[in-house]
Length: 225
Ligand SMILES: Nc1ncnc2c1ncn2[C@@H]1O[C@H](COP(=O)(O)OP(=O)(O)OP(=O)(O)O)[C@@H](O)[C@H]1O
Ligand SMILES: Cc1cn([C@H]2C[C@H](O)[C@@H](COP(=O)(O)O)O2)c(=O)[nH]c1=O
Image (cartoon, rainbow, N blue to C red; front, side, top):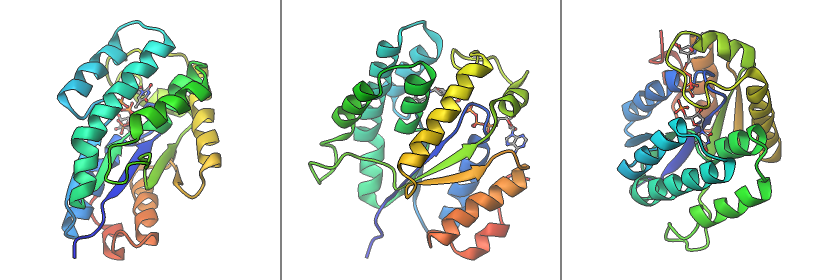
């Protein structure tokens, strides 16, 4: 009998360390016989990647930004996430809707009620259960002080529109993530992302072992060196 799909998202402020661990986790799942789809937001389809380029680079107001992000998300859900979950894949997605509440909501100060309406519109009617609003089964939150994230990113790459924001913006985004985690504690797993890569990897795999989604052996394998 095929196993049900799992939708797992990774969140945190820019530079928190999410991307450093997602491929390692995909390898761990594959080693245990699971098919894995790795993706990201905004992005993940040709259309959504075009929208990503605009959102990350072109000046726009917060409503335009939110509409483009949810348009990209719907296309990504329709064409990648829902088909993968229907096949029984583990879907590992670098950011999802919590990022919109944290960045556009808490960071930019955009109306959270409007975001909730857009969320319902964009994430409903795509799975065989018509009324289901697709949400992650688990959200791993890499919690890191904005000052530490800024140090990690300094000089690492050319900053996009978000990475170029001042530290006060990221304090609000970090608070936005804390609020989302407090509102859905059963869905969120918080990691102390200030620890070194190996310890963060250990925290990460422990979450999956505790849930029974990975066997205990992988906690000491793979991951960044
Ligand atoms: N635990 C860690 N300790 C120190 N540096 C780290 C750690 N984890 C990642 N880094 C470094 O910090 C930088 C940001 O890491 P990474 O790209 O994984 O973060 P991210 O959360 O995916 O960021 P973004 O969302 O902006 O793409 C990279 O240069 C990476 O090598
Ligand atoms: C999904 C999503 C993302 N963002 C922002 C957050 C980041 O600054 C960029 C994506 O870059 P990354 O290197 O892939 O992390 O986009 C946002 O503002 N709102 C969202 O919903």
